[in-house]
Image (cartoon, rainbow, N blue to C red; front, side, top):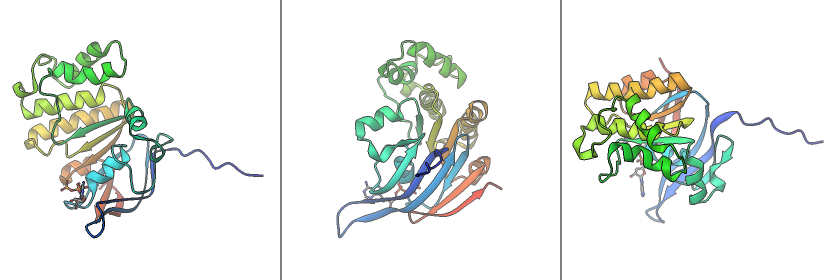
Length: 234
Ligand SMILES: Nc1ncnc2c1ncn2[C@@H]1O[C@H](COP(=O)(O)OP(=O)(O)OP(=O)(O)O)[C@@H](O)[C@H]1O
């Protein structure tokens, strides 16, 4: 008789993940045997020197990039078995991504930037939900503005509203405050942590900022493509 293994309760489960890019002799080993499990509701900071592979690991865990080896499961779905289109569908509604450069569409208003991805996903009340989300990040009075008419902090709020509006279980943020002054950056992080606390959203944040890392319950150190420390935050 075969005994079934228990269901994997981790929200993110990476096993022996490797990533190499380029061809020999200039092939670069970016991730080397990453094993990582993140439970639903955790807040995780990913630290490490420049070039250690943080953004690459995030790209692999969020389904933006396929690893060269190993497996990545998110919410029980084997990302490594999916093609690009299926990955895009899998990310939709499950994963929100916030990057250092806000990546807003310059020809769309704040409201359209937040609503359009939802609308493309077939949500009928996309604009109403986008307006609610913009109000929640303190931009209810700026919905008709274009990105160029907004400050850096306001643009990042729009990017956060866009990431949160589909109510994803998992938020990835890659140095979300890197382009902002300290006070604005702290306010932006408050938004992400408020959502984490209120909705149990799992938060995975890449940062160089020790103060920001200390706000996460768990801190992972990456060096040269490997996890070298995985600890409870001090
Ligand atoms: N498309 C690519 N082709 C070749 N090498 C790449 C590519 N993307 C990233 N790399 C290399 O992979 C390594 C890891 O890059 P990555 O951006 O993941 O590091 P990081 O830890 O996020 O760095 P930073 O803190 O500077 O953003 C770097 O040496 C980088 O030059």
